[in-house]
Amino acid sequence: MPIGTAATEAQQASGDGRHENPLTGQEARVSSRVATLEERFADPHDESNELSYARLLQADEAGELPREGERLLDDLVLNADFVPRELGGRLERVDTLVRVMRQLFRRDVALGLGYGVTSFMAAVNVWTSGSEEQRRHLASLLLDGGKVSVAYHELAHGNDFVRNEFEARPSVGGGYLLNGAKQVINNADRADAWVLFSRTDPAPGSRSHSVLMTERAGLDPARHRVLPRYDAVGVRGCHLSGLEFDDCPVPASDLVGEVGHGVEVALRAFQLTRSAMPGMALGAVDTGLRTVVRFAARRQLYRRTVLEIPHARATLTGAFLDLLICDSLSLTASRAVHLLPGETSVYAAAVKYLVPRMLGDTMNALSVVLGARYYVREGEFGIFQKHIRDLPVLSLGHAGSAACQATIIPQLSRLARRSWFQSEPAEPRLFRPREELGPVPYDKLTLAARTDALSATLVAAVDQLPGGTPQERAAHNLALGLTGELRRLQESSRSLTPQNRTALASPETFELADRYAVLLAAASVIGVWQQARHDEDPFLADAAWAAAALHRLARRLGQQPPDLPDGCESRVHEEVLRRFEEQRSYDLYDTPLAG
Image 1: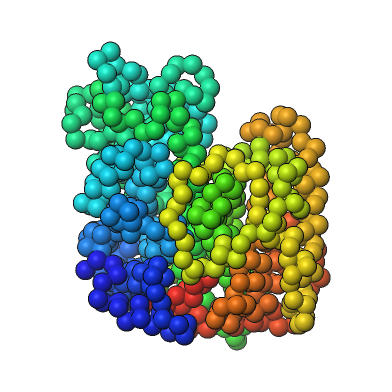
Image 2: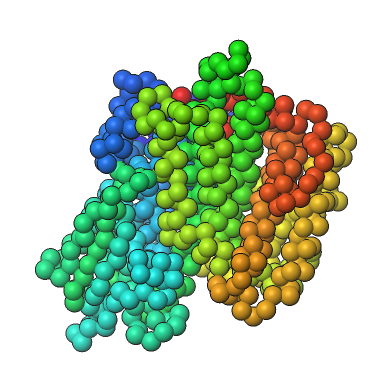
C-alpha cells in the first residue's frame, strides 16, 4: 500500500487533531505519508513487532540492514519521495522530504541512510544539472525500486575533492575511460548506477573535473570491481565499500552537465543535501530524548525520580530546546531552497555545520542522565547507544564541518559589506512549516550569496517583537544582544585579509563562521515564533520557548545574558512531559507517534 492511500484519508481530512482546519494540498499529502510510515512501523517498544527497537538492534549487531524494514520501504515505494513530482515521484518540497525521512531516522539511522538517502544525494546532481533524458531515465530507475550511489571523495584528499585523481579520460572512439578508485561509498555493491566525480583534465584548477552518471549494467566486468566492505563503528548495517576501474569504457551520454563543470554541479547538489540531511537526523535525537525521559520518569534516586532532580530536568529541557533550535534552522534552510535560491549556498552550509554539532552535544548531555545504561547495547535503552554511534556519520557525509565553514568564510566579507543591516527581512512564508511552496528552482541556485534575508529578520525583530509579558521582554532583549553580535561580526568580517577569505583562513576566521551560523539559528527561532503567533500552535506561539532558545544561543556565543524570567523553563519542561505522555514528536510539528 503506497504512502498516502486510503489508510490515512482520515488524517488528510482532519489533520492530527491539533489543528482545526482540514488539511489540503501539500500539507495533506505529507501528513498522510508521515502517518502511514508511523502506522506501518508500529510501536517500537513492542517486541513482537518485526521493526521494534529490539529487532533493529539485532540487525545492527549482525552488521546488516533490517530485512523487514527494507521490504516495508519497498512496499511503500519510498524512492518516490526522492523523485520530483513532475517526473512521476512525490518530491515537492525539501522541507516535506525532511519530515518524511525524519520518521525513518527516528527508528534507524542506518536504514534511513542505507535504504534511500544515498540515492537522494546522488540523484540531486541529475535533478539540478542533468539533461531531460537523464532526469527521466533516473526517475524511472528509482521508481522501479533501483538504487544509485554517489562518489565525490577519495581518502587521499578528503573534502578537497578538486584534487581528486579518479579519471574519466576522453576515449579516442568517443566517450570516456574510467581509471582509479573511489572509497567509502554507501551502497556501491547494491547500486544500479553510480554518480562519479571525475577528473576530465589533468590540469589543476576548478575546471578539471566533471560528473558522470554510469550504470552498472553494460559495463565490462573485467574493467571494474567493487572493493571489500568496510567495518564501521556507526551505521553498521550500511554497505560501505568502494569502486575500482581500469580503462573501463563508458558512453559520452553519461556526462552530467558540461565538461569541466563538476565543481558547480556538486556545489549546487550540496545546497539541497546539506539543507535536508541534518533535519532528518533530528529524528534520532528525538528518540534519544524520549528514551532518557522514559528512564528519568521511572528511575528512583535519592528517594525521588531522576526527573525531579534539577540537573536532569534542566538537561531534558535543554535537549528539547536544542531540537527546536535545530529544526527552526533546518526549516528555514530547506524552505530557502525554494524561496531564496540565491542565498541557499550559505544557509545550507550553516545548517550542515551547526545542526550535527548541536545534536551531538545534545546526545552527549543526555547520556549523562542515562548514566551507565548509556553503554548497554540491548534492552529498553539500547537504541540510545546505537543512535549516538550512528549520528556522527551524518556530520561527515559528503562534507565535514570544516568544509562547510570553508563554504561560509569566502562569503562573510561580501555579506558584511553589501547585505547585513541593509537587506530586507525574509518573507513570512520562510518560517511557516505548513505553507505551500512552488517547485525547487534548480536553475536559480547560485554558488555564492549576495544578500542575506535571514540575518535581516534578526535585525528587524528589534523593532517588531512584542514586549508585554516578562517572557516577551526577555526575548526582545536577547534579540537586541544578538543583533549587537551581528554588528561585531560585520566589523570583523570587513577587515578580513585576502587569505582569510579562503579555505586557508586562520582558526579565528573559522570561529567567525561558527558565530554566523549561531546567529542564523537565532534569526530562524525568531521567525518561527513570530509566525506561530498567527497560527494555531499554542506552544510555539508562546514567548517562553523563544526566549529560552535565544538565551541558550546567546550563551553558546559566550554572552552572559540575565537569567530568564520565572515560568520560561518550566513551560518548556511541561511541554517535554506532555509530548512524552501523548507520544508526540519533539520538533516543530508535534506529530503523533506510534511509540
